[in-house]
Image 1 (cartoon, rainbow, N blue to C red):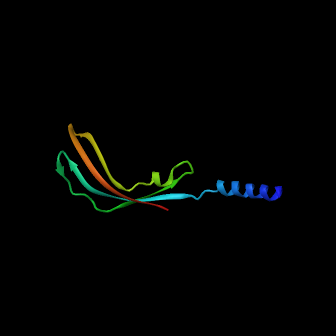
Image 2 (cartoon, rainbow, N blue to C red):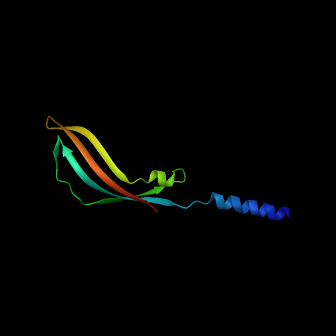
Image 3 (cartoon, helix red, strand yellow):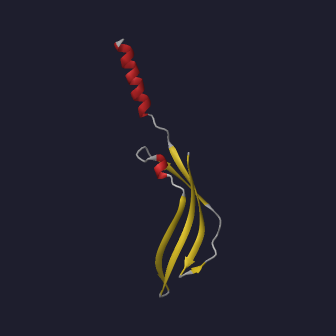
Length: 94
């Protein structure tokens, strides 16, 4: 009986330590771009990124869909530009 319990415990521990490699595949499309308050024409071509998630990462928590807004300023030729870019991310956990 002790042997059966021992084998069962070893089997459970070995199965618990196995982990499936997960990847997050995201398709991103810039939906709008504004420079100094003026809407710009955007390239609707989506880009796809694939990220391998490590055992430490939380899987679905690290693979998020939704809109992302990036704002910033940059200077070129002595002029400062205010940029607002909105990107739609469609992500799937594989």
